[in-house]
Length: 180
Image 1 (cartoon, one colour):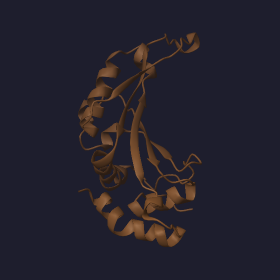
Image 2 (image 1 turned 120 degrees about the horizontal axis):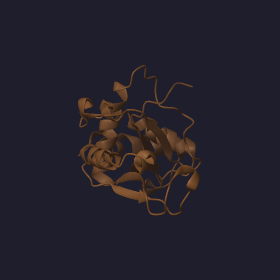
Image 3 (image 1 turned 180 degrees about the vertical axis):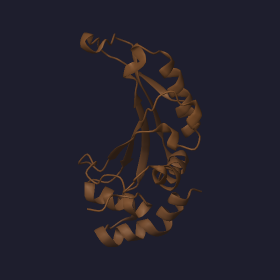
């Protein structure tokens, strides 16, 4: 069992119940899923980017990523309908908790001049999104094999109804937020 999952069951549920006066344990917010996404805008000029990204995401998450395709053609961006424009992976249950543990304990501390993740990246419904600029921060990615620095968007979806609940949940889980 993951460290964060164990901590959630043993400590975080009690802390959240005390703070928000939930009548039932099932009302306590929890992590639902984590989505890793990378836009592949440069795939129109460099088709190898798709292969590199799929390989990286497989190594990082242990799951096969899904390619996202353009729904409409946009001539200004040189995008044709059906062209691959992104790559994403959705993590749930144990894979999600394992990734979250690796993210807060191994990846985020490697960022140079890291002062915490931004506090203002909540969407108003309890979900949190932030970006990582370098993929080689993940231990599975070899920095020598990286041809160009590319990053990921990471979205943490919670069952919280407000940003305050989600902030408390994530900070209790160990997310290193920037000091206000």
